[in-house]
Image 1 (cartoon, rainbow, N blue to C red):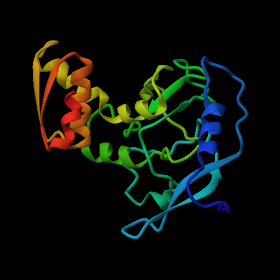
Image 2: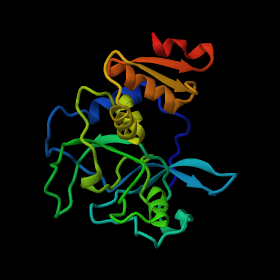
Image 3: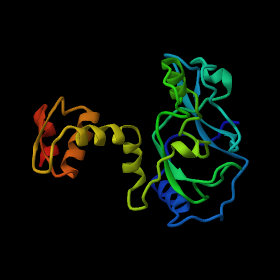
Length: 219
């Protein structure tokens, strides 16, 4: 069923929703509805659109990712919401989950159920198969969910879900130390901009090769 409301949420709605979802410590006081809002893809392809609809809330046992079995036509498999790099709070866990508890704040990266033995076809499928984060409630494997500190905002944490690990690893393996200079080509890109921010956080001195609008990244 499509919702009658259209357009982006108001600032009051965003703030009220953030307050409703904010928890300082694990708690079991969650009321999980049967349905939730989701941004679903209509007419997948070049002329696609996104529509806010009510969809069923998935259960921890609902598996939307089968390695090597899904093609890219995800709509025909029942998975219609796009998006990745999300942050949220665990409201329910599966019977076999022992490493997290309800109320834990965590993030969702772009890869779901990565294969233990790297197979490019399976890896590509893992990028498309899970229910996307343009949905209020989704399922995600606990072992691939990074825990998110409370002091890190949702907006910042979501930006780190995809590239934080590779960027941090690359800088640490580069052999550079605090106070060393680090050169970044193409600093105008979002990814390289994030590299610069990490370099600053590691007390390095970044040199950015880009247009003058990116100068503030090094200040």
